Image (cartoon, rainbow, N blue to C red; front, side, top):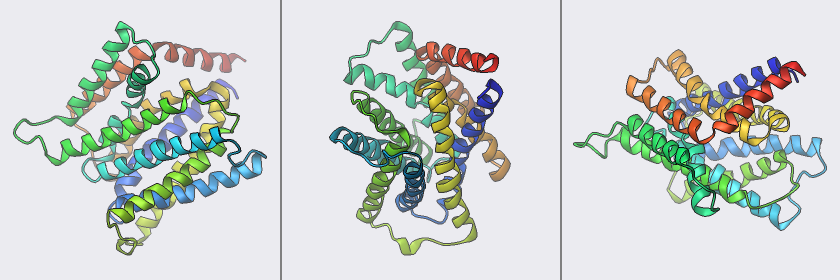
Length: 305
């Protein structure tokens, strides 16, 4: 894979994952949130599991560690993350949700410092501060209406970002040979089951789903295109660059989500929200400056190799 192809796949993956926030926003008009997320990941998980079964003989978890990883990833990174994301997107546009979710790597650093003892440098602390200031700019809290729908929505999506970051940190101490595609497939299916049970527990009704053409289109897009197909691209890039560099794609997602929200929904974020995203990215750049340099070097080497 040369650098031009790698760059193209980076942009394509960022576009697909960024577009998922727009598709969620569209689909929530027709689906209750938790069942919407559950159906999406039942479908995506089955597709990725089929790919794993065809491409490796290690298509199911074999060890206790494998199942622990499935439990953490499925419970927090699929179940918890998407439960709060889908509920939060009932209150805030997809582009705003994407910006708040981009705080994830900063929260990962914070959790790693607290739970795994990772050292925080002065620049790392400054990066954390920038990240939280950025979320404040996105939320734009009004002292006279601290429980406005926008602030509540940003808060709920913030919890979604925290769930994903916590899951990423809790999986780090475990070493396993389970392929990424196998782990992802089972995590999707386990997370989908938890989302389904949560929907039942909160009295969501499958009968309330409006099976319109738009509803089916948003679900199929989320499950097949920005779900299963996007993860196949992710697995290819992961094998070339490694997880640290690939996770930087998260900072292109809000850009694509904003552009697609404008193109398809006529929505534009305001200047304070845009400033909040830039502030979050500056915080991330301070914390992950070495990863940014390594990514640039990897792409250059792919171009000349």
